[in-house]
Length: 149
Length: 149
Image (cartoon, rainbow over all chains, first blue to last red; front, side, top):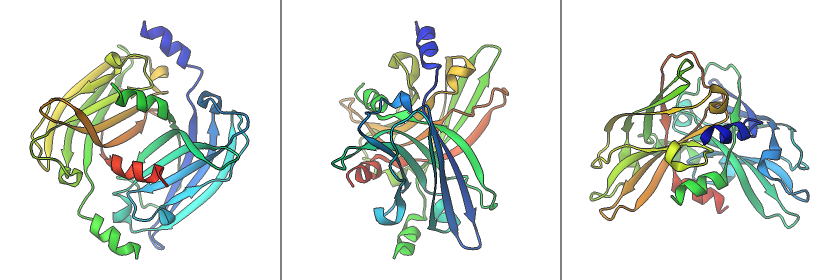
C-alpha cells in the first residue's frame, strides 16, 4: 500500500539551500552553498565529517569546475555559507548542469557521496539578481536501485 | 585554455522538453515528455532505439513510479509527446525528485542510460497550471569521470 510509505517518508527528505547569480559585466557565475537540512535522513556515521561538493558540468578539467566546502561534524542541520565563483560566458553557462552532492569523508580522506541534486542551467537568468531555492537531495542508493531494475 | 573548450561545446548539449501539472482536486501529478533535441551529442548507435525513462524518486516499488516512452530510431530531434500520471498528495510530491534519462536499447532489450536530468520537486506548484521547460541532459560518462577524481 503506497500511502503508508508516503506517510513514513513525510518527516522529510534532506535538502540543500543554494543561491545563484550571474553578472554579465564580469561574465562571472557565483554559487552560494547556504545550508543543509534533515541530514539525519542520509544515515551519517558519527566519525565521518560531511561536506558539499559542487561541480559545473560538462567540464574539461576538474580544477576549474569542482569545488568543496569545509567539512562539518554530522548533525541534522548544517550552516554552510560558502561561496564559489567561475568566469564563463552566459551562452556556455546555459549549456551546463550543476551537480551538488553531500559527501562524507573518513579520517583517511576517502570521499563518498551520499545524496545529491542536479540543476540544469539552461534557463539561468543574467539579470544579476540572486535567486535562492531549496532543492531535495536524492540518495545515491535510490538511483543505484533503479538502475538495477 | 578553457575558452576554446567552451566554444567547442557551444553547438549544443542535448536537451529534453518536459511539462508538469499537479491537480489538487484529484491529487494527480502529470508528466508530459514532449521532445528531445541535439541527440547527436549522445553518440547514439545506429542499430539501437532510444527512449526516455522517467522515475519519481524515492519510491518503494518501481511499478508505481517508473515510466518509459516508446522506442524511436536515433535522430537528432525526437518528438516524444507521451504523458504519464500518478496519484500522490502534494506534500509527498514535494519531497520527490524526478529523474529523466535518455536510454538506448539493443535488439536484445538491454537498457543503457546515456544522459539525464534530475529535477527537485520541492517547489512544485499546485496551481493546476501546466509548466513547460527545456532541461539540459548531463551525460553519465561525465558524472562517472568526476566520481573517479
